[in-house]
Amino acid sequence: MNRLIDTHHHLWDTAKTDYPWMTAELDAIRRRFDTDDLLAVTGPAGVTGTILVQTRSSFEESQEFLAVAEDTDLILGVVAWVDLSSPDVFERITTLKSGKGGTYLVGIRHQVHDEEDENWLLREDVQRGLSAIHAQELAYDLLLRPRELPAAISAVRNLPDMHWVLDHIAKPEIAKGGWQPWADHIEDLAKASPTCWVKLSGMATEADWNAWTIDDLTPYANHIIKSFGPQRCMLGSDWPVCLLAAPYRRIMDTARDLITNLPADQQADISFSNAIEAYRLEPDARN
Image (cartoon, rainbow, N blue to C red; front, side, top):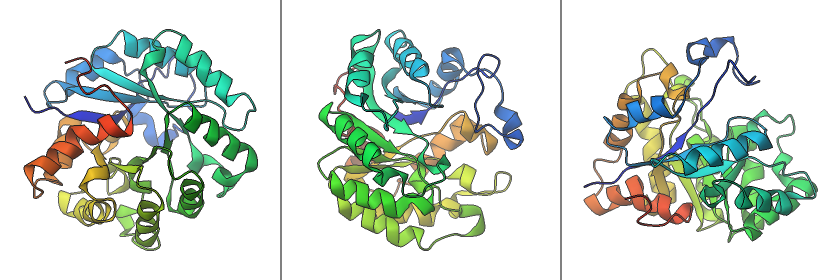
């Protein structure tokens, strides 16, 4: 059986928690999305494993997501949140690892693109936090827009042996045909470390939600694959956010179509093996 890991999805319940980033423009996804919803869409799409990613700056959510992962066979790992600016980052990660589902902790993420300071990643306290994540042998997911790419390049160069994962190809303005300086920064980021991966995810929601086609996404995906190489690319849905632009099945089918011209072994790497390496997953986890 071909194995497919969706390396990027979320869960949330807007009736219980406030999500500051969920503006009126996103009302279509302002409802509960739980593991039953996840299983309903991933099965028909051929997904055999997933990575659950944080949605807000909440240590409690991190603990909750790890517990959910332990109880959900489909979820192979969790990219959680801790306060990178706090002096006790290492200890907080240890607390997560020792709690329910702690073995499913594979990475940390923060909404960097929501920070006013475009150089937030280079702050001294944040740099200490990133070093603590590296010491705990976890990946760090970079949630950026093109504005923050120069700082991210410097951060990656400062810790070139760390596992880095760029989310959503850094959200270029696909709907407006945005290309530079994004394209050059992507090349520089790819060169900054051999252990920096990228998710082919989040592209449809950066395109015209109502009229995008695969042709709109192809130049961006091709540039990512050329820059990082097939050995450092992964597939992700960004569900449920992706529902703003298309159903889950179309998003995942499009992702696979974007790599269909590659040799079969490289397609398999992008669909499965690269996620195993980037997130240090067990190769046979939850067969």
